[in-house]
Length: 267
Image (tube, rainbow, N blue to C red; front, side):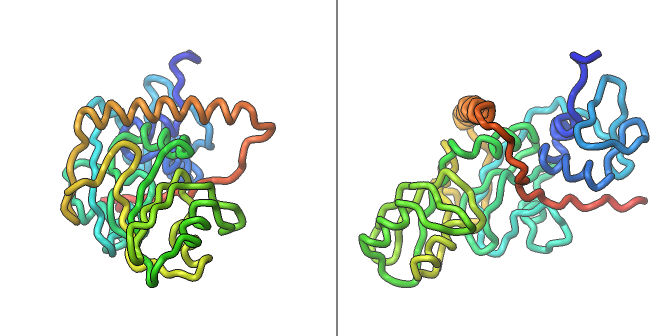
């Protein structure tokens, strides 16, 4: 029976309900049952088990995964919480249940991914050290060579030192930056550390997917080559992440923020 066991969070993500990290939060909130019994994190599911969230049964989806590239406008929040009137899910209004991969600040615009494939969300977030994200940024005053040097060399924010990164001055008050880490409001905090305020921040690329000429507020499905390349990048970086983790003496106890999933109202 051991070979047939699946971790509960993986089972939930396979249904397209949410990512594994969000599933873990639901389990901790005592909203998940197996065969009518509340369970603890780390629980396993075997064939024939009935898994429910807020009393609603889940079924593993056999349908083709959905991958969406969305050009998010400023003012839209990267959350699945429909109580937030500016939430990204209501704005897109896709007929299938989808959720964002990662976040993009409410006051920023540009590329963000959405999917119903909880497994790939987990892989992308776990192996984020190899995933480039490219931004075009405009600040409140002219940029000089010293600004570019300091931004690219790493700055102390949030109790840590940012990784070295690519920064290119594109004239006047605008620059381009490529990050491989995702600290909270990282670019804005880096600019503030140097005495600048961000006026406009647009994400133009995530990994192999470009924003291109996708109009603001519009979305499109990934192309087949984009999906193939994305899966390749995820597979490679996951292996790198697992190797690095195996060399650590102790695993990190830090947890990434988990998006809130509202309870379903009982009829």
